[in-house]
Length: 80
Image (cartoon, rainbow, N blue to C red; front, side):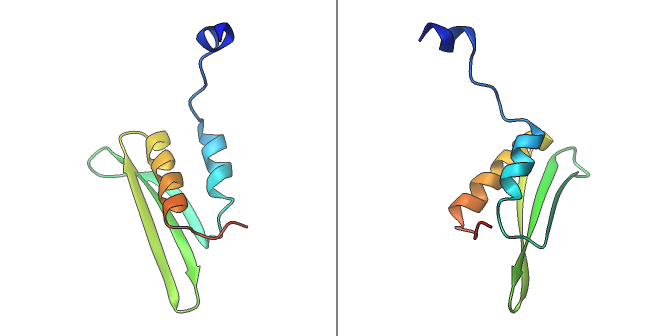
């Protein structure tokens, strides 16, 4: 318990989140700043009848990526 107080759990970094997102079957994915200063993380799903794009937004790139991981888990997207 003392170690937990001295070494709080680290917030996920971009590389960790990118590795987690890449575990899901995708056509393309990425993150980009929006016009209003927020960040968008997008994830294009491969489908037999076209495709679909999931989007998640955050005030930072990390936050948008964290939200995308949550969306992928919630939507039960197939993992590779």
